[in-house]
Length: 89
Image: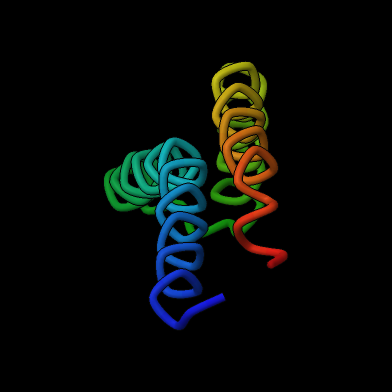
């Protein structure tokens, strides 16, 4: 396996990881901003107020995005294993 093939393999892996994590990171960011604004407006500085809704948002986002994420992961795995002979030799 040449250096260029290793670089391509790692690039595809990192791009797939980025796309898989993007929905969850986006939801976490949005939930954090909204909760921070609510805390600023209400002057409530309880850490549980910020943590519990953010975790709930992550859980809901995970359940909603899970079919899409599994589809992308299966697609990547099939593409990787279909070219396995090229990487093994």
